[in-house]
Amino acid sequence: MRKIGIDLGTCNSLVYIPKKGVVLQEPSVVAVSIEDNKILAVGESAKEMIGRTPDTIRVYRPLKDGVIADFRVTQAMLKYFIDKVMGFWRFLKPELMIGVPAGITSTEKRAVIEAALNAGAKQAYLAKEPILAAIGASIPINSCSGNMIVDIGGGTSEIAVIALGGIVTFQSLKIGGDKMDMAISDYIKKKYNLAIGEQMAEEIKIKIGTALPEKSFKPSASSEGAGKSKKMTEKLDPSLIKKEQAAERTMEIRGRDLISGLPRTIKISADEASEATYDIISEIIHSIKAVLRDTPPELSADIIDKGMILSGGGSLLKNLSVRISQETGVPCFMADDPLLCVVKGTGAIMENLDLYKKSIMSKK
Image 1 (cartoon, rainbow, N blue to C red):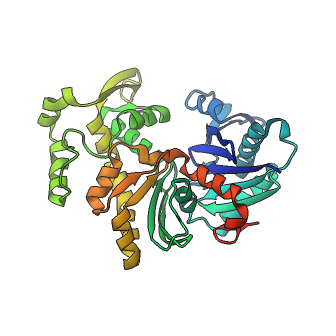
Image 2 (cartoon, one colour):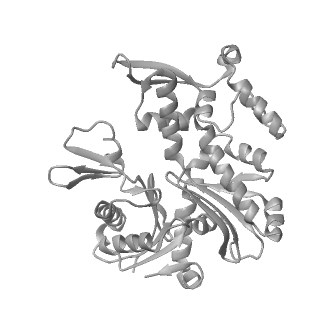
Image 3 (cartoon, rainbow, N blue to C red):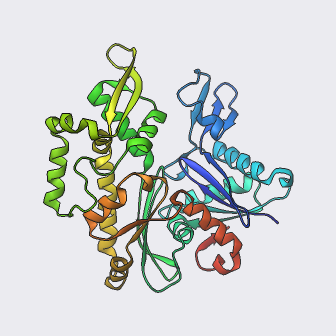
């Protein structure tokens, strides 16, 4: 019988098959015909339609904040992913392992299991994403020593302290890469009267996004609070922006002028992208501090020793680990392949199902 691990994310879904590795990585996007409620496209082909469709077609994500928002469409999307990776063997019902947010309710868990079974799974298992991310990042979760993982996805951010195979303390935030994209889009709308699409905002974040203003960022800079506030003041000083514009990374973006309604092109800098996402990152750091405050002293000592591990697509934002280290005083490192941590964790569990069955999974 085939075993499949799935990271069912708000933005992207990944599929892992034991001994083969990650076999599929596609956007969690579906295109639906409004007239007959028929699914027209799933994944990459549906994402290409965003912002380009007529009134008769709706393109959207069936998952919101890491949980199912549209049951029927999520089920169809899961079936598409399963059929695509099973190929010729799709008539065999596979066993599925799906990652879910740590703060998920029992009703939301049931919805994921039902969707998986209706999509063609013989058996569906669920495991919490912070545990999966830790396994995928090669953290020894069963050790009595404490480990901290910060998994920043598209719709949610999961912050957890793990010891002896379980979560000791955690926070699940409905903040992630999506909120950063929205913040960039809103910033450009307010500052330049320019409306940009979802994909353009995401492109800005990937290409020039940074957690710290570039002109005031030095890798060896001290992390005193006063220094940080001074940096933010400098960042907003227009004379400094003009003086240092040449040294900054910039990007040309296109959108629709909100006053004239006509297409317009502008240039934005990395520091503007940093200013746009500053508050979103502050919220994530606030939750990291809250988890650290709730951590037992013995485990706190372990975390100071080893540092925290960043995973998920949101952790790829430039200088994020530096800013987290500066503001918390705890070393922060990025996992290898942060995008693949959760799905690698599902694969590791499927390869050693009996070992993990009792400890970290809920079977239905």
